[in-house]
Image 1 (cartoon, one colour):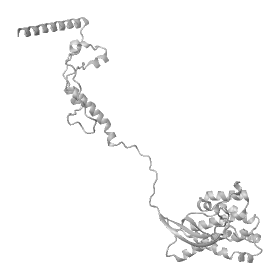
Image 2 (cartoon, helix red, strand yellow; image 1 turned 30 degrees about the horizontal axis):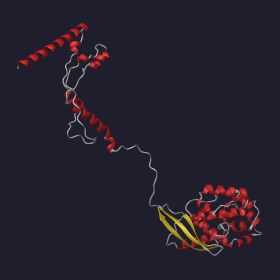
Image 3 (cartoon, one colour; image 1 turned 45 degrees about the vertical axis):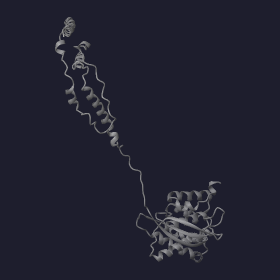
Image 4 (cartoon, helix red, strand yellow; image 1 turned 135 degrees about the vertical axis):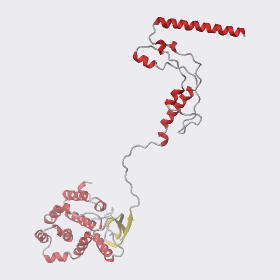
Length: 349
């Protein structure tokens, strides 16, 4: 189906935002030139503006209204609904409209007796403004269609109708009857939907739950995750502590400085021969709580628990290769002597 032949439906007229709705109506008229249907669309929007919260006035299509009533070919639909649009014309322009659509002023008044009453209610209900509230209202009405079947029509986001305001209740009922003067609403089978008004009720609702996306926040690390790294550090420290309680091979503490200054070189013979390293104590599973069997110490305390080492830097510093060689030979001889002496003592015993 071509776009020019697509009518503007009931949901669009009573559900779409104002700006988009006015664009749709303007486009429809440009494509079809159907002034009668456009006028009924505009009447439906005037009803929405009177009963609903928000501004749905026709100020965005005043030029379109002028074009329809001052230029378009006159027809019965324009004559029937002309009174609703009088406020959009100057006095001189309105006299031109009457002259084009009616034979005389008297004919105009006779043809608009019923619509004058609707026009007064439209203007009155449009001027009513309710205070902002968390409560929302909707009008649920019942109409008879052209086939005699009842159907329900719900108009959402309507103005509050106080229970004690009997006059307002009656005015809304009369204003809803305006829908029976419009022929643009049909069922899929082509049956006119609004032919007789039956009843309505205004339902109250409230906003019970409201949710908005929270602003992005820095990632929060749980206490378990936060303690993971310290626990690992403690485990390593505990392992070092267990090893420190067992004699180990210890390197010359000044070896780093010696290598940096390129004055002394590391020599394996300068290491002291100590007993084999004991296997490390098996650690318990990682836990945020400290190990009760192991006393944790600070790095400073741990350094004091290491076996004392012989500072050989004074012995080696400034020696020649020959002196070092003689020192090694003297050590070997001493070891041989000590072993022989120890063997003799055992033999005597």
